[in-house]
Image (cartoon, rainbow, N blue to C red; front, side, top):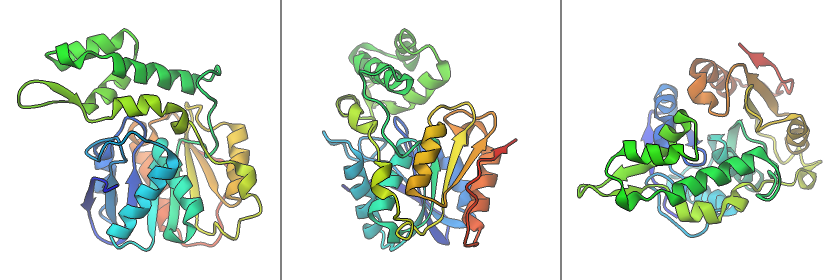
Length: 282
């Protein structure tokens, strides 16, 4: 699949992958700052942003979308930052094509599967609620974004989340609305989006994954818990796992300066060892 992307800057290649319901636009500010030092590629993943829609959406396909993208751009190796779903895509890519990864930053997502939709898992239930709200929004009979926001508020009480989601709703010249997000496929493929890696499969393969890895967790987010940290170190024994205090799941937006400080420090570090102690950043 030929993915839509934005490119800026010069230097070592750095690919940024957004999360679920997001797009490359969400990372524009971060991308501009990093473009002072790197050749940044902001990529729309399949069924998001301006990339093509498909009736399939899973990490094996997104992994291979990224492979095709890098080959098309002539990139033999790149630094990769992935947030949430984008972090999972980056992880699936990294274990399949480790020689193509220079450094890897995974933002607020664990590599392992989240529970299925029938379990009492807050992440699964939250995503099921969100995607059903988007699916049931009657975009054929709304005339303003304010009206769409009112309808979504009946199921999604948090205004900030609604504003983020409504960035996917675009008005055409004839006044009608359409989703940039492939809502139907995301709804159907939600179990696959909650999937992940089996850490036991990758134990004792630390020689294979020789590239530096950093996981960044938001203190207020529950997407990386203590058990997840143990599983991370099974797959990447030398990974760094660091927490940014006061941040939730959207770490890069909520604590941009601290996030940038951590990212720049990691990408510019040329040492052979990596600190795997979890330390918070004020």
